[in-house]
Amino acid sequence: MARPELSFPVDGSVLDTAEAAFSLLTTAPGGLAVDGAAVHAGLPQRHIGLRELRVLLAHPAIPAGARDAVWTHLVGRREDAAWQVGAVGVAMPLLRRTAGRLAAGYPDDPSDLDAEILTGFLTGLRRVPPAAPRLGVRLAWAAYRAGLVEARRHATALPGGGSELAVVAAMPPPPWGAPLRVLAQAVTVGVLSAGDAALIRASRLDGVALADLSTTPDELGGGGGAGEELAVRLGRAEARLGQAILTGRVGIRLPC
Image (tube, rainbow, N blue to C red; front, side):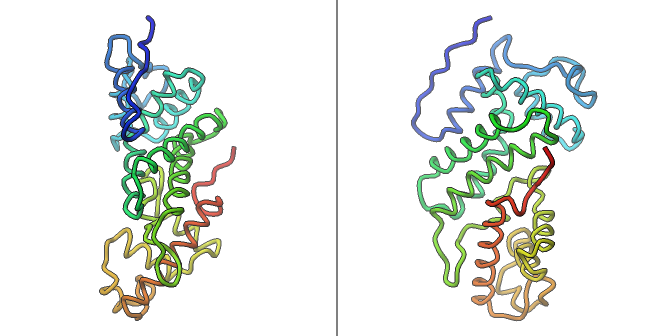
């Protein structure tokens, strides 16, 4: 069955355009699908359309091995343009969450940020070794790092260094981003002190106001400084963490 010609308006976000293409390729009879029985025992043992597959992968009952197997299958078909769209569509919830979080400190057109995130994902899709483990993690970080480069380039500077971009809060969510693991890595390699990691966790992940943290011990994210002092400290810590993520010193590092 011949696939329909893909033609969509270029106005607006490229993520919207990609979603429209994904919808076209997956809703018609004979649309993109995988054989669950051939991919992994943790999937329904039948043909699964990619739209349904996208929903299944977000369910906590799906084992990590099944997610890995799905991405191995998708990467294995990356030479087919339609399956590239399929891979983007399956990753779309992650791409949109990453874009939404990074956009919090982005002063320009969010569609530019979306474009960089999508470009990062597609670049990763083309370059990732097909036999590498945890391909979904690798692709998520490729998209995140590309978006982070764009967001940091335009983020508003804060006094004392750093920017308004909340680096940890913008990480790809679990099972991809694992922010607590990244913070632990940053402490281990000396990018952050334990106190700075606690400050980032408390303010960015737990949502504790800096004014409240100013009265808490350092090991809980405070340190006794005024809210303004903690803001400067937070900005500097996030700047160091962001640079470490961009250079690959901190983040999900897996053997090829």
